[in-house]
Length: 124
Image 1 (tube, rainbow, N blue to C red):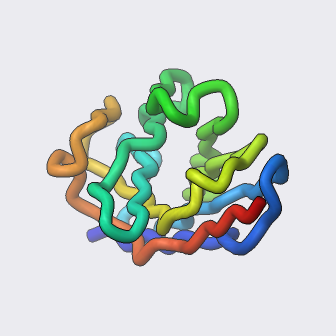
Image 2: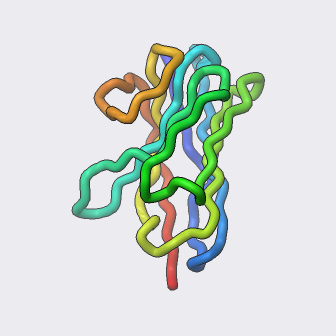
């Protein structure tokens, strides 16, 4: 099995940056796609980004494209989300997820393993 733990969340002013980390344990995630999703209070979970198993192919949601970057360091069993030019509407709980397949998906139901989430708050 796989366990995922997010870290790096916090509070930042609009225009600032944060880097989130998703650390895997148990079964190594180097052959699995990983995605980031986020959820604000009262809203549906939203796709943010995904990366394939070797880190080459990436995909971003419309609301974050050009501002966020997903990368991975497979020897460290870790995936990152670099968040720049943050806006108040980026405020949410951020979750990483992994699925037993090398290619990513935007569909949250296709991911088997989830982290506990990390809070990001962006103020004006």
